[in-house]
Each structure stands twice: as C-alpha cells, then as structure tokens.
Amino acid sequence: MEVVHERCCGLDVHKKTVVACVITPKDRQVRTFGTMTQDLLELGEWLVAEGVTHVAMESTGVYWKPVFNLLEGSELELLVVNARHIKAVPGRKTDVKDAEWIADLLRHGLLQASFVPNRDQRELRELVRYRRTLIEQRAHEVQRVQKVLEGANVKLSDVATDIMGVSGRAMLRALIEGEQSPQALAEMAHGRLKRKRGSLEKALRSSVGAHQRYMLGHLLEHIEFMEREIKELDQAIGERMRPFEAAIARIDEIWGIGRRTAEEILAEVGLDMSRWPTHKHFASWAKVSPGNNESAGKRHSGRTGKGNRWLHSTLVEAANNVSRNRASYYGAQYHRIARRRGRKRALVAVAHSLLTAVYHMLRDGTVHQDLGAEYFDSLDRERATHRAVQRLRRLGYEVTLRPVAA
Image 1 (tube, rainbow, N blue to C red):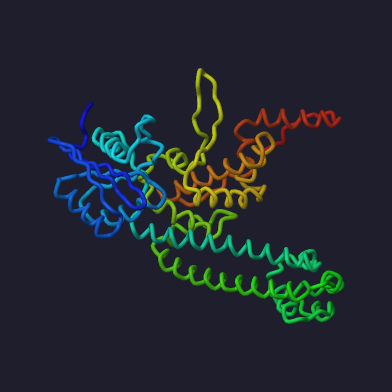
Image 2: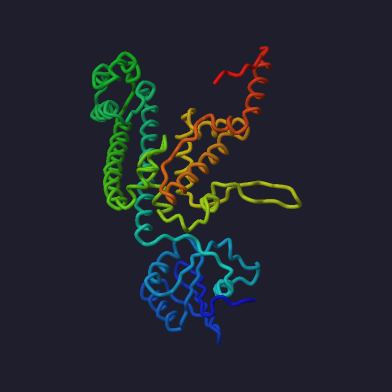
C-alpha cells in the first residue's frame, strides 16, 4: 500500500495517559506520556525531534482538547478523527495496539480529519454553548416555579401568558413576602393584564404556605441570577461577533430567525465555507440529510446520524419557527411533508433547506430570497390542479376548470 506520510504519529488519548506510536522509514517507537502540561510538552518535543509531520488522535470526549491545544502551536499537522472511522478489528485490544493502528492508517492516508475550528472560534463556541445551556436551565427553573404555584393552587398561568413578566414577578414577590389577598395581588397587574382583573382574583385565591414561599424565593433569586449571567454573556459574545456582523445581518433577514440563532449557527460553522465543496457536503456534515443504508437493492433506515448536537438543535428550533409562516417556502415545505411523513421528519427537511440557504449566503455573499408558498405547485401545475380537483370531487362538488385570462 502506498505510503502518504513517511513520518507520522498515532495517539491513543485517555484521561491520565497518552500512548504515542511514531512510525518512520527506519523503525517504529511507542512511548506513554501523562496528560499534565509538562508531560504533553515533552510529547511535543519528542515528536519534533523524531521529525514527525502528521499526528492523528481520536475525538475521545474532551480528553483530546488539551493535547490538541498544546500541540497546535507547533509545526505539526494535527488530525482529530471520528472514533467510528478508525475502529480496528475486535479482539486483542490494547492502548499500544490502538496507537499503532491509528499511526498505520495515518501513514497510508486513510484518515479523514474532523472539522476543528481555530482557537478564537473554539472559545466563541464555548461562550455561545454556555449561554444556550443557561437559557435552557432558566426555562427549567421557570417550570419549577409553575409546579410550586400549581401545588399551592395558584392558577396564574391560566390567566397570564408569561408568569415571569413584569406583572407576574410583582405578584410572585408579593406572595413571597406573605401577601394573601387576591384583590391586592390583582392590583399589581400591568398593561393588558389589567383587563383580566376578575379572572386574576379567582386565579390568585390560593393556599400558599411557608414552604411555598421559601421555594418561590429561592427559585426567583436563581432565575434572576441566571438572567444577569445571560446578559453578561450576550455582551461578551457581541464583542467577539463583530467580524460576523455582515453574515449575521444576512441570516437575520430570514423570517423567524433572530440574531441569537444566527450567532449560534455562525459560532458552530464559522464563515469559511470552502471546507465543504457543496451544500450537500455541508448538510451531510451537519447530519440534517438522510443517511445511506442499502443492502441487496433494498433501502433500510435513512437515519440522519449523530453530528454536532448544538448545531442540530439550533437548526431544528429555527425550522420550527420559520415553518409557522404558511406564506413562505419553508411553511409550504413543512406542511407538504408533515402530512405524509410526520412533523419530526418535516422539521429536519426544513432545517436542511435552511442550512442550504445559509451555505450559499456565506459562500457567495447573496441575500436570502424566499421562493414563496406557491413554489412547489409551480413545479408541476398539472399535478397540483388534478389533486385539488379530486379533493373537491370527494367532497361532493362538480368541478369545471376555466383558465383565467392573463
């Protein structure tokens, strides 16, 4: 088999140890290093001394990150590889054999590197992902507030759309401080909620005790703490997102996608679309395209597979938003597929279309143009007409078609 890289190294990375196998034209050496900073620096010095040019390692949890970070500044070309792509034949598995197997595959050019962004974007990713985690945790805490209120028979959510709005928070603070009068609590309503004063008095007649007040106090304090953290993260992310402003503005033009969603997409994929030859490669990497599973001429499950879960969840959430606009291409696509294949498959299909649009906007600098809800009917007017006529006939109507003069 052809040798692509004459001097290469395979790393089997674990929490406490890194097993390195260096292959050169003359020999093969295996050494084990610790994962402390000094140990990893010694690993880097040894690789440079041996004249290694390429280093490959599995993407094992988060343990590969310190190794990658410390070796990144050297002249070595680093490859982080999906562990599923380099599984050896089962049996006789040891750390040394794993390192040798990775080195052999790398030597013959059989490994494909995963996408690892530069250090600045990796740090931006961490901030954006942490913000998303806090937003989700805040939502869980609001649900806990709702559970405590239900336990005390406070039906505030039956009347107020958002119990954490200005009016809802004022009522919660009053409940925590011991206010029991439904009339006094209903007086704290602001805006349109004032019109529901009678319903509020009924909803706020409850049995809140010392335990509920204690729980509500801690939950509200925790929610406000997380909101302050999210606000600070917004500012930090905004500073790092300045180079992305033009791209954010283009993505934000899509109906149903806001700035925060655009930031999350760009933090995961960056601005350089040259990493993916076509939008199909891009969608396949993001795992929002059907998988290939065919045997004996039969197609089996076309699961999308496991990819970047942060990007996937952001795209599906965005697809859920844009599909609500029935007058748009995405809304028409969603309802067209949901009738036949179900809601979840329809959302993944819309997410695929969104990612395709983002790819072309970032690669070509184009502006988003919605194709409209009539796009699918215009592809085959005769079929769309036949379908509409048949549906009316099933409802008991006699249909006569006459073209409208232009």
